[in-house]
Image 1 (tube, rainbow, N blue to C red):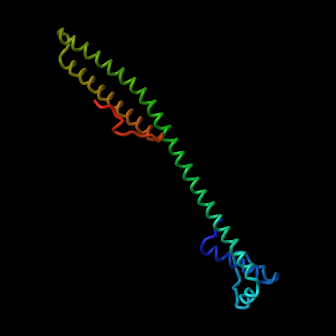
Image 2: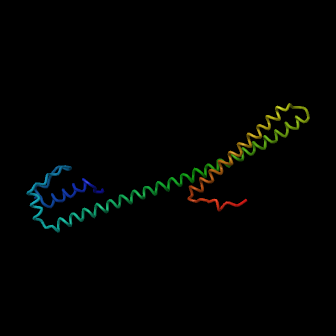
Image 3: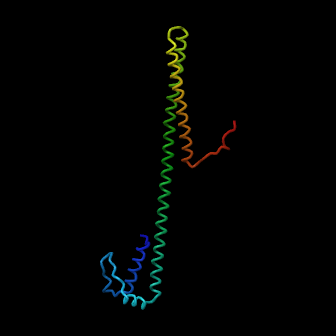
Length: 179
């Protein structure tokens, strides 16, 4: 436990009492300290000053040591939280890339199917079997699926960048190919 402020003065107060009070009067309820009277202070002056200085120095060393340990514990806790956050970000982005890869495959299949449908409706329209509305609808499906394909590609790129960031890497414009 780190001694700061009032706690430190309370500990010094207790230490003085132990040094200057007779053994029979040292028993007091926990949390309650008797007041130091002028006679008690006179008795404290009679004690060797080295004994009091050693006690005060020991209390300061303990307080400094406990403060350093508390600071170390806080630093370790911060490091652990940062590390766990980094691992979570890496895991999240790896999962996102895996899921988006599957989505991209399915979306590419949808684009291919829409293009085949457009080709068939265009041939049927040219042959006079279907109206131009079906060709326009098929073209709309091709464009919608292509737009979805581009959106999935954008999300995959974002997840890749976030993964690189989570791994602690980076990039700059000078490393990009000039074209």
